[in-house]
Length: 319
Length: 246
Ligand SMILES: Nc1ncnc2c1ncn2[C@@H]1O[C@H](COP(=O)(O)OP(=O)(O)OP(=O)(O)O)[C@@H](O)[C@H]1O
Ligand SMILES: [Mg+2]
Image 1 (cartoon, chains in turn purple, brown):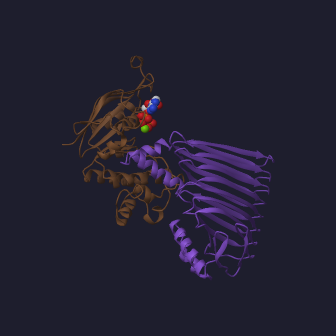
Image 2: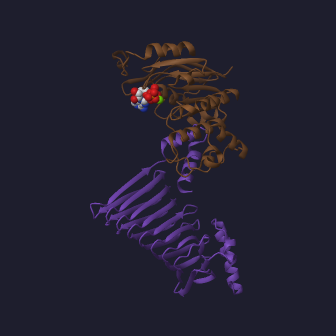
Image 3: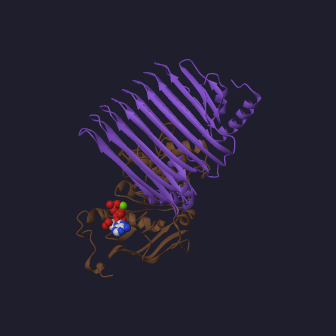
């Protein structure tokens, strides 16, 4: 699956980066695990399985890949996607078109690692279609360099058909963020369910803009969009989570928790709820502020310093 | 002999005495009960001893082994061996019971110890060690986790604020065992309770009423006094006119 010497070198670099980010690179060499490995604008690893077809294609500054999971396919082992960039500067675009056939069930584990970049923009677009009764879990973990100079624009647009399920988790907590613009939206048909979640730790001069949106179109569609952000130093965070209740008895909940530490953080959240059907039910909860005082004092009464207690609470919140 | 001593402590908030002229002595290795009706000031006393924000004494001193700890932080008090079981333990997102018990790995304990302690408080290790200490635990389960956490700390002074509330009556013997364990390991227990069975474990008791110590002494006498006199207490839970004049 890895052909040229150059590609092997790049693969080794990426593997190192991937493992640094907490990924298990042994999965890439495992023929029983579906995987797609992208470095810069090249696909350097690819493995499909019965029921899963991956069609990658090089585009200007990046890769476009169509991932098709056939109907009635249930795959226990997650599909691994690794997107990396091993140069110091540049631009990378990835476009994923993901089609999950009716009654199928798949899990994706995606790692994006840019550990050495100095000036870098990563634009990701995921267009997801989940068939009837199908389930898709997508976990997307990012690992950036500590220069804070990454610009990350990531957009997910998903449609979930009747009785389908979409769970999307975005995590960027281990390194500096840089500038993040995350936009995840999902359109839910009858009885469909979605859970969108984003966990981010922003520090120093990081800037974060998050929008998670639920369009509850079908009857009894339900969804939750939650964002947890820890904002440190002089970081700036905006969260706008939205829910639109269109279907009869559709239910949506949006939640935003922003924990701040430091005088100079600049955080805000705006919930947008719009009911377009009197039978729909939308709720939201939001909190912004320092770490909960009761939690803090509970841990301090066990001998932790305020700093240690804060760290443990934050670790729980964002992992 | 080690001593925790409250020397003429007052806690005033707004224009109200929450605690008034508190003098109390807690000797090492003993069990003390703090009794009193709802709103008497029991939890406030626990917070004050632990150094919780908002419960700093308005006057008076707290001494531990002769050292004035009135102005020490919660952490420093805990490092001297004081700890508190809250009446309503708070929940934590994303922390498993095991992470919580070890304070994120800070307390070094063996697998075996974790299992032993969880079993001790009536939680099956298999079912609970990987559960989150969040809102999905029931009130009683949360309290058991907290008791386990306190046992692992090996405290010299454990203030237990209603350890029995939320625990089913069948499991009262577990609370007795917890108290016994702390004392056997050289600790002192100050237990706040509304339950006679628990109060009876103590040797000495303080009866709080309207923020003051109404009477103190051997537990048998205080429990009897409480039952006989406080059931139909004429003291309403409001500061007296004299108390308002501060
Ligand atoms: N921070 C505070 N500010 C003002 N009043 C307070 C504060 N904390 C407690 N109080 C008041 O002090 C009184 C004693 O409260 P406390 O919680 O200590 O009672 P308690 O004896 O523990 O009661 P219970 O048996 O219901 O737990 C109550 O009237 C309470 O409202
Ligand atoms: Mg109380």
